[in-house]
Image (cartoon, rainbow, N blue to C red):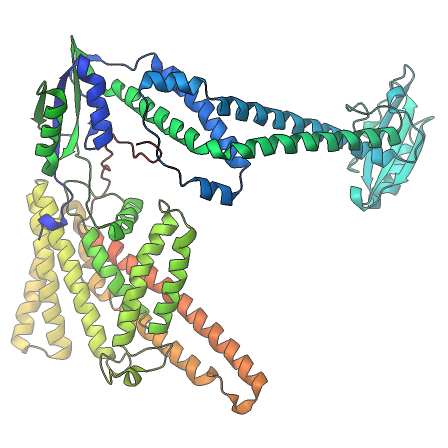
Length: 634
């Protein structure tokens, strides 16, 4: 059983090859993805990437830029339709570099993108001038003649509620000429002030905190009178918009070349990874050396594969890991259970030298959730909702993986709903031929409470047993034994408490179990060292599982109360019926959401706090093989 709860056994290996086989071996390692490469600590000369790495990186930046440009201006339907192309044949590095340099689509897409950016900048400056021209329409002014040796000209926008205050401030300027114009809604109901005053005067200080916005009267495109500016800028903006539209349409037509560009990007990424990885190699003379971790079960297959591609010209040595070294963690689970691995990584990756609790989490979490939301109706509703979520979320993201776990939990909710005869609070098993099958939350409350506590005792004890194995394997023998005495404390304590309060055993046996519980507790405290504080949880953590009864029963009782008070009938008329129906649906929805929230939070808590705290170390290093998963290249 313990082996089933271990991550994959790993071996540290060292491989030596002739330098002339380097690229061939790197390609083989990259395509098969079985080696997690680590830099050797041997005092040998470091290998290094070739000069081609910079060239490949520059080409990748250009191709990537072209792809981003095309995807930016392509609609989703086109993208989806054109993602179904056949993979391209992989090119040699030399051929790839030569062809990537001559990709006309890349050159054209980048030039058009720069053109669009430049023209959009031109539109911004034209719009700025256009707005000023529109504000000044009706005012006799020539923007090109506002530069004088004797007079300064300024224009300000002021909110209407501060216009009078601004006018009064302007009176402090001697011999100033002021033109005032109220602007319409296009400009936020503001007031324009155009001021001509003697050059050299400082006028900004008189405005105080009025909050006036100064207009740039020397902005580009401000020529002649306002009408001329408005007409010219409007015409130029339309002209540039057409030019941009034409460029965008040209980029959209490149959608047909997107598959080719994606293939080139993938090939460049592959070559860059293969070239970059050389910095992790060591070399001596005409031999290069690489170290890393491989799955132990695949060692023979890996050796045979390398033997085949090198004609036996290699050496593979299994190494002892160093004292401060931790093997990477690799798990192998069915695809539909991978989201549980994702959640464990999100929490903390299991170490390769400890018990992996993921299987226990996979089994226990749906049971906890299903019991706390044991209703067929709620289960089906949540299953439909969570399946809908998985349709549009990223398979690599947190939301998707949490939703996949939720799907399994929703199925468990349906199962326990049938067992507890709950269908939106109604008991309908008799109508589907199940009669009194299962249990009743209200009638069997005492039995359910006892079952949940016993489940807690079992899981907490299992956690302590896993702690014993972990500590023993790590050489902490005394602390390991304290985990066994902790288990004995729990069991003897249960009999002592059960005998004292519920008379499940005789009075004399109760005393003996009480003495034994105290003795084991003291022994645990003495042996567990820095973990001694954990003994306070030996009784409280198993009892914590009683929350399953509390949340499960509260959900059922609320559902029944909703049914009794708000089940709609037509006896009171259609309006009352509709109002009751709305309330009925809304209240059941709220009860379901509350049950879902509590089921998830408490189900996770019972595993991560009450169970994991007894043994779990975490902080493992994920197995990351040197591998590229091809999508566009064969």
